[in-house]
Every structure is written in C-alpha cells, then in structure tokens.
Image (cartoon, rainbow, N blue to C red; front, side):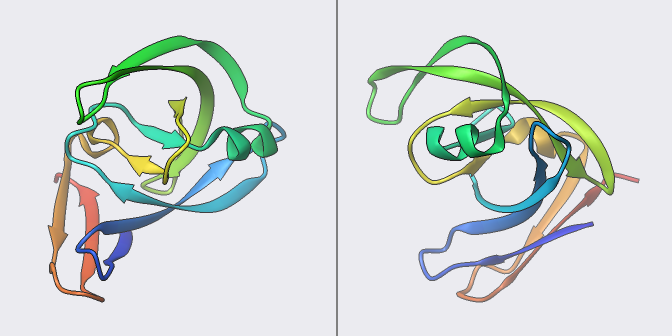
Length: 123
C-alpha cells in the first residue's frame, strides 16, 4: 500500500521512490492530479539530477487551454513494492502523479489538512 497525506490546500500528496539512471531509489512527493492521464511529471532539473533516459517529445493541453511541449523520459518507480517502468513528462511545476499509475487501485482519503491517503491494489 502507498500512503500520503492531504496538505493545507486539500491536495493529495503521495510519496514514492523513483530510481535514478543507476538504479538508486530516491524518495519523491507528488500531488495526485485526477485530470492527468499520464503517470508522473517531474521538473526538468530533477529529471537531469536523476539522469533519466530521454525517450521522445510530447505535448499536453494545460488547464488554461494552452498547449505545451515537453520531453518524455523513461523511469522506474517502486509501486506496490515492485519496480514499475513508466514514462515521466518533464514539466517545470510541482511533481504530479497521474491516473495511469492508479489504474486497478483503490484510493481512500480523508480530505482535511493532515488527513490520510491510501492507495492499494484492487483485490
């Protein structure tokens, strides 16, 4: 099970290990974004520090309607206790956790500052 907390802005903050290019895990915190259908976004500076492998370019429609291009990188996260290969979008904002990682999982949260967030596989 993955766990997190609700911050003062009612955002669900989830911690997860992301492996760098050498396979070393680094703890990251990301905000759960139910409007994001991908897996994970990370700032470009963090992608560079993790030495993630570049895969392609992509684009996304932002909430304000603008289209933004970004680089896509291969990464591995520890999800449900096992390594999982994902694609990371390099976008210079707070890290976002998307719905692709939540597929086939239950999400429970208590939306109050300091509330608990739990993500576990659907039985």
